[in-house]
Amino acid sequence: MIRRWNPPGPAAPLGRYSHLAAAPADHELLMISGQVGVLEDGTLAGPDAESQARQVFANIESLLRSAGAGPEHLLKLFTMLSGTEHLAGSRAAQGEVFARWYPRGDFPAHSLIVVAALAAPGLVIEVEGVAAVPRR
Image 1 (tube, rainbow, N blue to C red):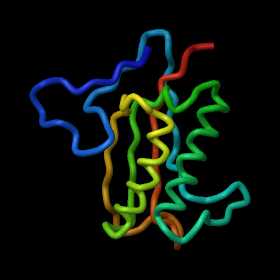
Image 2 (cartoon, rainbow, N blue to C red):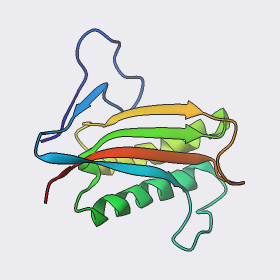
Image 3 (cartoon, rainbow, N blue to C red):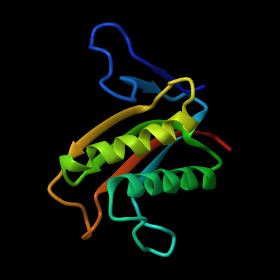
Image 4 (cartoon, one colour):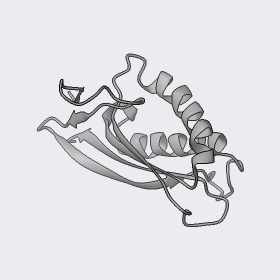
């Protein structure tokens, strides 16, 4: 079973994440490339961070399912936003999705940075992930 925890010492997490996450020996690591808020046809899910973030998480969930895993297998997420004005929208979408993914509050490790821009015009959020998937 994947272990996520917050040991004594560092301050409590500032958001929905755990300070540490560990994979069991019978799992393999799965690296998820940065996912952006685009639909299957390549169009933007919307112009705002909230709609794009919802799509990002849907894309991550789809990729995990294709590998026989789910959000419960995520060890680490890394979010990039193209401006602080997108924090509220991305956090709203994350809160909605994480309430479904992690109803007990057992969140993966997570880092967030604000960048000058992402790879294409209109993109406001990109999220990478690392999952621990049971070996087949």
